[in-house]
Amino acid sequence: MTSTLEEIQVGYDVSNEFFRLWLDEKMHYSCAIFDEDNPTLELAQRNKCRILADFAEVAPDSLVLDVGCGWGANVEYLARERMVKRVHGITLSPAQYDEAVSRRLPGVQLWCTDYSKFTPSERYDALVSIEMVDHLVSPQQQREGHAVAIYRDYFNCMAQWIKPGGYFGFQAILRDRVPRGRADLEDLQLTANVIFPGGLNPRLEQLVAASAPAWEILELVTSRENYGRTVAEWLRRMRANQATIMEKGWAQRLMSNGDTVWNNYERYLSACVRAFDNHWSSCVLMRLRRKP
Image 1 (cartoon, rainbow, N blue to C red):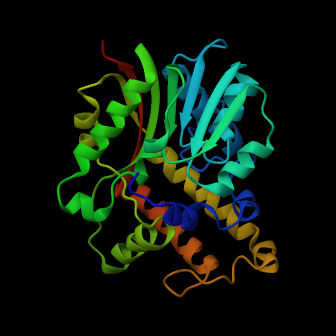
Image 2: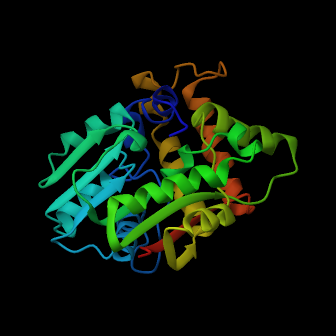
């Protein structure tokens, strides 16, 4: 993976309690899917897990791997709500790994490792990956024209881990248009360089091209408006908990650009709201089937 352990720790290891104050109660850090039956952030995040599990055709007797499992929200959904007997998860973040392990989920086995160094002991029946691919390609690699090849290596690796004909529920943030205003560009650069250093969101056409040799795309759904609603709710919750965040001391910590965690995260989430509103960013959910 292009993002190093140190860069992953910048993005995810501020404090588990910091993130707990403004993410949903299960700590999903990805796009939720809202609808009439799932109007709250908590329900919409569960709905996202349901869709991706359905895409992967997960059953209780499936052996499932969550690639980039984060704090364990999706593996918890699979273990407790889908009643999957054997769920595996990998993350590169030590803080996320510790949180996921602390949930003591039945039938769940977790590893803190780079996916490129992970060797499964057996092939999986189903795969799920939620916005992990954003850490595969650096801005420099994109400029040098290596992005599609790196994404293709990832998809080919996933194909080796799953049984022939197996299904993959995949989700990613997307790059779309480039804003024209200097302030907007600087805010997006903050997200790339300070909040998530070493990573870059793919373009949709790159993912389609990269997945093609090993995977058949059965369904592809974009979800820009849902992501805008998700980040707006994160920003609302973070602001509502400002006093607690300040009291705990996380907010005053300096980050690599010399500004505080509070200022950077408020600026980052505000920029994300504008990015999805203005079509600078989007989101995709894909149902993939491994080719013979």
